[in-house]
Length: 454
Ligand SMILES: [Zn+2]
Image 1 (cartoon, rainbow, N blue to C red):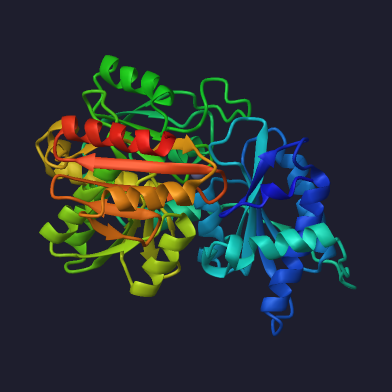
Image 2: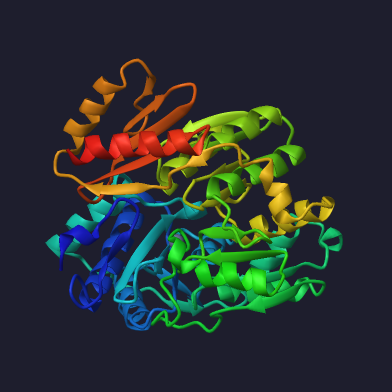
């Protein structure tokens, strides 16, 4: 087993090369030991297990469940589920935690594990993943005298749909035509269920059959090449909008009626406006990477902006701590802080966007225009061995800007601003630049890339 599969937010690697079923079994034992140690007063723990449609998922799931049972916790098997449905199951029914088998948007050779505590609180590297790694490597488990039981639970997704539908007024949603591309991955599962309740919509389905070989394209809508066909289809179908989701369905992306993919920062800003309309004066959390339209929108709509570090577990933690109603990462993760938990809600996001567009006479492209004030570079990753040194160099060169070290280095000038930070898992520097004009964005982007590569 390659110990580097234990990453900042999950466990991920190439199945058969980096890890196999033995890891799944030991992880089951390690997870049950961790949670039993944390909840000593509870007699019986109930842990949700689910998996995505990858070819290696069923075998891994079987061994994971065997490990959990040997460790003495009861397993609630919810079967094939997206990440948001997995989170919902843990949070909504009040289980003691869960393990999902999925490698999100990674290519088909990969697989992995997402782990949560009660209320779907993520377990990250410092809050348990590295403890689990050490337990797995030591492999010195004492098995429970009474093995855990497995219960199969059906009907989770319909319960989730019922819950999510309460966040929108379905009768107000117009008869839009929508093209959806879930990349043969988990988003197809929840959209199928959701749209049963919205007969007024005309849905054009692309790459819909669940298929762990990803026959059409990689399940990562963040990369332009993966949404090209969807953008073209929105145009040729004369649709009102397009939607794409990533492999495990926790990230969602929108295409406007002119076939242009919305910057996730713009989608986030629109959602800020929507949730502030419903919750005047509320706090909203967002990550520090450039995406200023979010801050503008929160302030213009009377909300309170809360800036967080990058990473879904960090932003969730802070949203809960500060009582933010909504939170969003510029990578396409959008979270609602609900009474039962704070996690990604792509179906509620879809409903709210459709509801908002229904209130307006504008097309999606016209509507989004008001939010397209700045020019964004996208995330530019560069392999470097001396990341910390580069960051120091950048701080020195831009010493007359306003600097913030919450996550890497953020530097602000009146007309442009940027963030450079080290990857949590690889020898990479991640750069994002935003500016008031495209020319300035390109100029500063190239200037910074040159420093990073020098
Ligand atoms: Zn994902």
